[in-house]
Image (tube, rainbow, N blue to C red; front, side, top):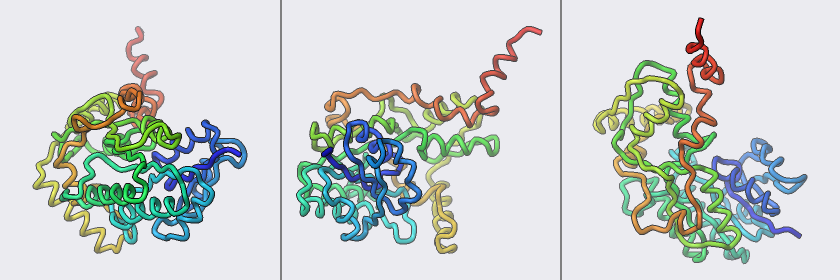
Length: 326
């Protein structure tokens, strides 16, 4: 019988790519998610019955344990960018990660891969970064041979980075940024998935910091995005003082509406993260140690950002028509 991997958050941005790759490796894949009916799109990744979504709440021991029943390996891709009602950084990214590792160890699961983030630091001012570090510590306490991946900002067709800023270009002549001078090293989602697969197959373990082939300021990446989508915008690098006022206002609005309006613009915690570069530190194990080369952003961005061009898929045709002689 083929081996089984349980991927917690397997229908999410990164998890779905890991699921697809593991199905190609011939493994059975169990996608553990809160809403299995919304994860049915993963089933065609493999043959009939090879990839199956199952119900799981990582805040509950019995639910996590049931999802990993019979698994040879587990992967934790569950994470949040901002807190929302019951989904708090500590309960999801610390306690949730530790719970998976503890129950995996109890069940005799030999392999675990955990998705963390660059900047994970128990001493950070950011609760997000703190919870990521505490989650790593919890995983290693029970699964000392686990692979921990710390990616920079992840890009790809379903990302919340380039897609988010590209969508903002449709409104008004200016594009406001906070932390425009902060450096980022965006990494391609399928590269992260490939690295995770190496851990699942037992080819690597330990902590790896994953960044793309280029480092640029946030303003620099936005400029590249604007070139790809054929739009001209005034990029406004706002001071952190203005960003602090904005983030406070948005967080307050979410609180006053009891979460009916979610702050997906800028939170105070995200602002703290923006004060620090998001790049692979020197000396850290990275793609090179896995025998991999990072995919350049320029090789991928046009594949999914074209829809934000003024005329979408017809933009290139219109540009070509302008050059035709009468």
